[in-house]
Image (cartoon, rainbow, N blue to C red; front, top):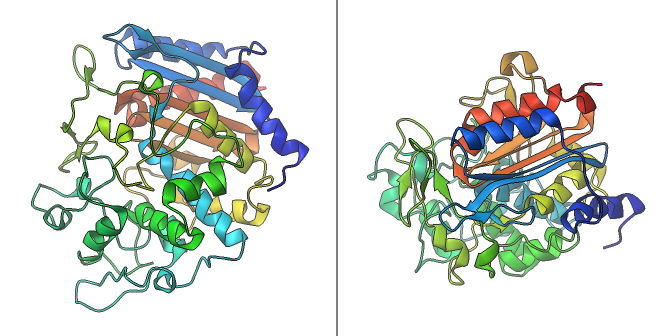
Length: 407
């Protein structure tokens, strides 16, 4: 794949500070918010990067990658990405669309004939790649179920963050397909395992295991060398912590933590990302650095560069929900791989209409405000403060309050 001068600038933007080539100024309000979150023991550690109009205007590694070992956070620390994996795998699927090898609105049964989910009445269902990308496929998540006796739990479905030894991606798809869909595809919106199914689709169309397919289609062309489905150097991996009082505690293997009231929660396996036998979960199974992820966001913000045609990037950022409201996210719709801001007033946000945003359950948040030329990545090692706590809103507001952005 060829790259233009603009594409090369994306690599330069992120690579220079990480290599220590040139100092990057810090946004004072952002630095203050990060410091307060650490001082108040809401976060253990974080890496925050802010780019505007292709220039890195803030980079910060703060706190501890491992508190007990007094290992400081570094700009090139590797994080378990959880749902930050979703835009990466979504981009891989759209590269296949751009190549004419995958159709957004065709029945995925054309490529995955063995994946045959049914509606509650037993009738067959037609699911498209667009519905997978926009989470309108009728699927759910095991961790959303009210208790450990829900349909996905009984079927042994993995959410991609648990210890799923003894099951492969094909086996997990069979388990997912055995559970009736929650609604007819296209009939509603529900955050779900759709990206895991999408990963299987990418794998099938590309003709390579998902980890290799994503490397061939996205992370390789963009130089995202530290992003993948397996971490081989545990010394660079940030330890995961759970919000607690008086300070976050270290996440234990198999510990269940619920991000939402009334849901059974996620049975986490921090060791999974080091397990060569764990299947590649498209929706939650990757690890990587803040710098790598910023490369992807900047490539998309600039219109796709050598990765995707501009028309597909615009489609990614178009609300695909038909006006449906996202639970607990007033003012937001959903595009192809991330949420899209429809109404800043309803969201009580300074972000521009059309801003892209999402996060990750291990403690991450990111957004792209194309109207303002902003790409912001905040990877933390503290769930759920770094995904849905005060820190996320405070960081957003600090970015927009910075004189370098407000002007």
